[in-house]
Length: 104
Image (cartoon, rainbow, N blue to C red):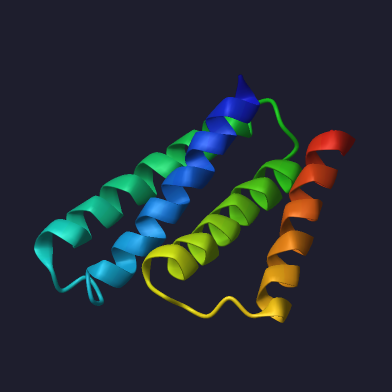
């Protein structure tokens, strides 16, 4: 169950990261409210997951999910570049997430 909670927390990290961009520096009300809400919910779920997962594993996976998800969102929806070096870097992060999962 902790891994499912951690997955949801990581996906919410993507939402608040995108919301932070859409809020234009927290100057737009609705995107700012969404950002703050999902940020708090993501942190709370991360804390729940840390009750039974090692801190380094939980935090590393949470950050990795957020980073990979945000990069993919940027490429797919914001037309950000998807160069080879960028994609290899994302693959390395995914490898790290898998490694942390398998080693815990």
